[in-house]
Image 1 (cartoon, rainbow, N blue to C red):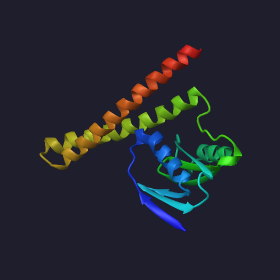
Image 2: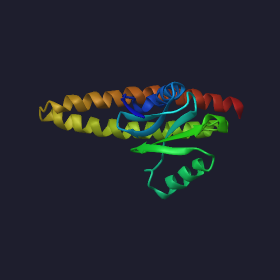
Image 3: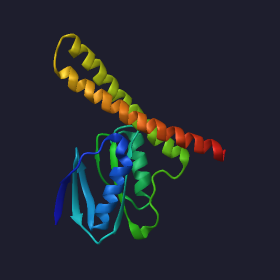
Image 4: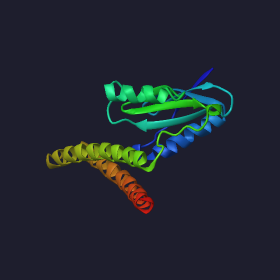
Amino acid sequence: MTMTKHKLFFAWQFEEEEQWLEEMAQQGLALDGVGFCTYRFRKSAPGEYRTRLELLAHSPGHPESQDYIRFVEDTGAELVGSWFRWVYFRKKRDDGDFQLYSDLPARLRQLDRILSLLAVIGGINLLCALADLLQGLLPGLLNLAVAGLALWGGGRLWRRRGQLRRDQELYE
């Protein structure tokens, strides 16, 4: 039996998204496919899988990404699906701990990739908003809202990144 759920997470909410996927797994719903705001689940034993997600540096079809995906799969995880540059893995819970960010530098690289994505999205939307607003076009307000949202989310991640950097300095 499969079930589809629709839920919106922003790029800076990747930890909340991962937590929600873990809660679904605890209810016996294993992630089986992903799309834009779309999650497909199949029935499984409650808590059978752990689910992790990551924003890759390149598209999933890129050779470097393919190497990384194979590396993660060699640990016993399976690629459930991808959307844009986000990849979703699951691994049976009884196969041991499953973390994609095994150390602080890996965690910081993940935050840097997300911050770069938000900067591009925010920048493009800001430029479009300015062009539209100078011509008196109403869609400029939507672009301005998207740019503001990307900036706000990026600010949240920037603060989290700063805290991780301070933690890193303490341990060096």
